[in-house]
Amino acid sequence: MVDLASVLHVLHLEDNPLDAEIICRTVAEAAIPCAFHRVDSRDQFLAELNSTRFDAIVSDNCLPDIDGVEALALLRERGDVTPFVFLSGWSNNPDGVRRLQSLG
Image (cartoon, rainbow, N blue to C red; front, side, top):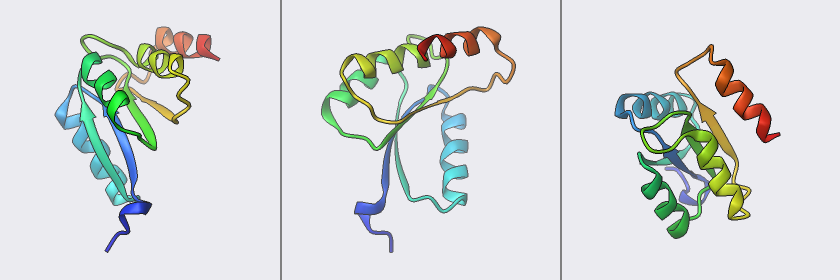
């Protein structure tokens, strides 16, 4: 039995249910106790940030009404330093890399 206090609570900004399932399954196979809460829009992302504390945020880089860089900027504007992980299905995206480098 997993101690609920030791479970990582992760906000997952992802619009593709299949991609979200792959992430959950990969983490579960690594035996990392996580509880994922998936949202797929800017409004849902902000609502969750206002209502719940998360241990980490995992974000797709490109969603219909928000991208990962914008999501990170919204988080940091709030003074929130929750660890933020970008995931993307695009392995060769120079524009995305440049945008991430501009944050640094």
